Amino acid sequence: MPIIKVEALRKVYVQTISSAKVVAIDNLTFNINEHEVVSIVGQTGCGKSTFLNILMGLEQPTSGKLEVDGKEPYKDFNSLKGKIGIVFQQDRLLPWRRAIDNTKIGLEVLGYTPEEQIKRASEWLTRLGLANFLNAYPSELSGGMRQRVALARALCIDPKIILLDEAFGHLDEVTASKLRKDFLELVHSTKKTAVFVTHQLDEAIEIGNRIIVFGKPAKVLADIKVEPSFKDDQSKIQRLRQEIQQILDKNQPIGLE
Amino acid sequence: MGKSSEAEDWAKPESIAAKTLGRLKIGKEAIISLIFFGVAWQIVSLFTPSYIVPGWQVIFDKMIRLQPYQIYVTVVRVVLALVVSFGLGVLGAVVMYLSKKLENYISPLVKLVMAVPVICWILFAVLWFSAVEFRIFFILVIVCCPVFLIDVLDALKGVPKDLRDMILSFRPSKMQYIRKLLLPAIVPAVLTSWKINLSLAIRVVTIAELVGAVSGIGFALNIAQANFSVAEVFAWTIVLILILLAAQVPVSWVESKALRWRL
Ligand SMILES: Nc1ncnc2c1ncn2[C@@H]1O[C@H](COP(=O)(O)OP(=O)(O)OP(=O)(O)O)[C@@H](O)[C@H]1O
Ligand SMILES: [Mg+2]
Image 1 (cartoon, chains in turn red, purple):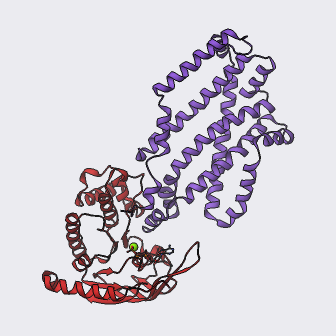
Image 2: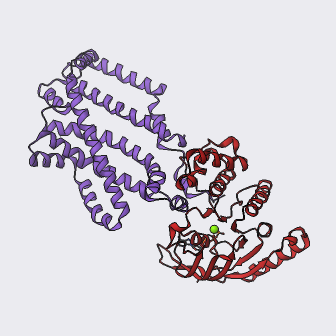
Image 3: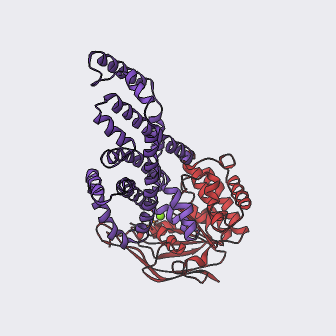
């Protein structure tokens, strides 16, 4: 059953100074089923973050339709409270809050008891290897650590749907790979629906059981199912990787609209 | 790299807090130059009549005989007027933040008020109001309130969209949005604004009292000047400097508590 429905979605930005129009999303149509883990790949500036912002209800679509759990996220903003979480491309921590207080901000908003807030937030930070940094301010953390706090902040409200925008991009490969495994296990064990944006094809293939390739501006160039058995076969992975790379290369845009 | 978030840039640690703490620490050089000034003054006083450059003993002698009541009056006037200015300023800033339309109406008026020289406000106050306390209150509020308003409004507008979106993604109530994001985000600017306004208000209140009051430090200065008592003028000046420095202490204390994250 689709939990996310995208139909002829279009987003046009008007730039502040030049008032030039930028088409960020152009006629995007696809559905995402419950419990699916979808990787979205596409080159830089193709509208991936814009798409997540619209999914989150932070931006209004210019035209077309988008439904999350039967609701329009922008118009019906509060109906998705507690159901959807996002890890932004940048950590976006509040500089005046310690790691643990940054982590529990969602729990505060959702009205958890203070004890429960602390308990959950510290559990998550510990799980992400930050047990010794609960009381550190963001300025005292490295970029990778801050990104993990942002991850904990999104996950500790236990949302049904989780959106990730290059969430592991700032991490070294060892940490990233460990987090990817942790994340996958979590998503599967708690039966979440996940939308995972990345520009690394390997990461997209490892995480997703489905890969959607975005053109620029965002439209579906390819929609590929990745069977679980696939992931153990290096040669198949290599072939898939090449295939996606070709699709991306073929669709280099010529000039701006 | 290059991906450092907007939020980060905006909270760079070369902060006002750090600078103030640095400023409050009196270094060795500062002490030396102050001592040098004091000694030089004393030497000059030996060769000049005491009604031009009085020696330190004369000044201190005057200082301990100043009326504390005048200090008290001035301080109460300043604190009261600043609290009211701050309240009105925050209110105005929030209203203007919430409504672009109202901002467009109010902001030219604020700019106009800020463009009028302080001395003109003092003259207007003397011409318009007969009640002395109200005159001074009016002058202080009309000078300080727009500063608070502009500072708070700028701070509100400066809250990065990144952070606003982050907190909105959790679907907070209006109150939660204000309490968890807007208020803490403007604290640094509010504290800076208080420091600026404190010194502004103390300087303005003295002139206001000098022209249009029958009590307070400005009034006492006026009397001292009428009596040609240079020593007393100096004594009051030192008191004013001390008040100004002392006024920074509570603000810096709050700053060190509230802005620990910046240090
Ligand atoms: N608020 C905005 N105002 C105007 N234009 C915008 C705005 N946000 C995004 N854009 C434009 O929309 C396009 C898509 O941006 P978006 O951030 O969604 O790309 P992206 O796919 O996430 O890129 P990256 O991989 O580099 O993060 C870009 O051309 C960008 O300039
Ligand atoms: Mg992006």
